[in-house]
Amino acid sequence: MLNAEFLQAAAAICGEGQVVPGSSIEPRYLEPARYAPGRAAALLRPGSAAEAAQLLPLCAAHGLRVVPQGAHTGLVRAGTPDDAQREVLLSTERLREVFEFEAWDRTLRVSAGFRLSEVNERLAPHGLMLPIDLSADPSVGGLVSHNTGGTRMLRYGDVRANTLALRVALADGRVLQLGQGLQKDNAQLALHQLFIGASGALGLVLEATFRLAAVPRQQAVAMIAPRSLDDVFPFYQRVMARYPGLVSAFEAISREAFSAAMAGPDETPRWFGGQLPDYALLLELSSELGTEQLDLQTLLQQLLEDEFGEAVIDAVLGADADCWHLRHHISEGLRRQGKVLGFDLSFPRRQFMAFREAGKTWLATHFPAARLADFGHLGDGGLHFNMVWPRHLPLDEPALRDGLYALVRAHGGSISAEHGVGPQLQQAYWRHTDPALQSISGQLQSALDPQSLLAHTHWGREGGGQRA
Ligand SMILES: Cc1cc2nc3c(=O)[nH]c(=O)nc-3n(C[C@H](O)[C@H](O)[C@H](O)COP(=O)(O)OP(=O)(O)OC[C@H]3O[C@@H](n4cnc5c(N)ncnc54)[C@H](O)[C@@H]3O)c2cc1C
Image (cartoon, rainbow, N blue to C red; front, side):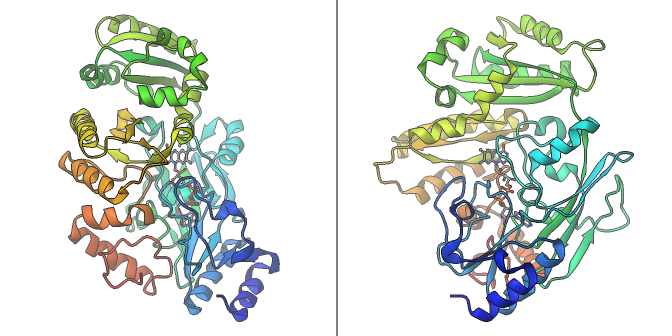
């Protein structure tokens, strides 16, 4: 229970209406996109970076742990409080003071509370964008804290690759500017990189400075049926070599995921005449040049003609919006079918298919009721090895996760490619990450946050001195 003194002091910083007691918090702050809801002691909604920075030491003084929250679209419960009602949620949605576009440098300095969609709407008249693409609408702070990848990472890189500087508040309220937003700067340690992908556990992101990309003037998309799984990566290599710099997405969708994403059986005949392949490929070319200089539709058509009968046995061309609509509706479709177990993995390309086969066999042996419906950002080695579990059956989820993660490691993969760690993967992190790395990470976390104010994700070793 929070004492009146804390509530009064918090209200003095960010205003009476911006301090919401636990019992009155709207569900959207407590219910994550995936997994169980949490409960918070209170919700704080600071309206400026200065207010946010002042709230942190206040919470520390009252022994409260703080969970920063952006748009709450994260998939590992890292922005969701636990259910003990001891944590305070700090929403960044009102942090919107700064939006500084610099045309000569093609950079944007922006407050943590802006959503990706609004950032790109405001940049569109300048022909520029923050090139992170996904089917959710995250905040700037959340993008940074989870180092989001998305479907066009192949071309533009993840958030890390596009971030030049950060302004952060540490747990003790100190505000640091990390980097000046220059394109090149080796005159200091690149400490901003530490905070990217840290799941909010090292400090609160107040602002980010991003490098921007030009909005493509044309795109060409094909949904492709490959002849066999063995053809997929050789085909990928040929595409990358043939059109360097033009491939912006190379996604894979299993038959089960494809079926789930369709609106209904009526939609089946329009894809591959109703004969869905084991694995469909979504290939996108894009360019900043206009069609008068380079015609992508023609290039894509030529590629498919040359590959026809070799790697490609069928393709749907000229339905760009439908292809992307289908790709972006897989998760929603799977949720309709049962409990979704998400595995956000990545592999060296040579191990990708080997893991997929080994994973399928392992599931069939140990958890035969699990129905695999995988998909992923195949071009960058990303695999959402997701499955649907019948809601009426009991499930030993820790055993399922542990078995699969061991297999992931045996194939040289990552147990969290782009969604972060957070409470959902905390045990797996402890079990499957090098203990020496955990020790160093824990020392860093303790140095920046000695009281574990922001330790909703623990980067140190299990029971390694951070408050549980
Ligand atoms: C339908 C759907 C599709 C998705 N597709 C992808 C995808 O393709 N690729 C991908 O990588 N992710 C994907 N995601 C996951 C998610 O959208 C990203 O992780 C996103 O970046 C989270 O941003 P958010 O603002 O919602 O953060 P939240 O969920 O609010 O928080 C996420 C983490 O960031 C921390 N945080 C938030 N703001 C701050 C701040 N200002 N300072 C410090 N810490 C902060 C939180 O404490 C938490 O640890 C998807 C999610 C959904 C629902």
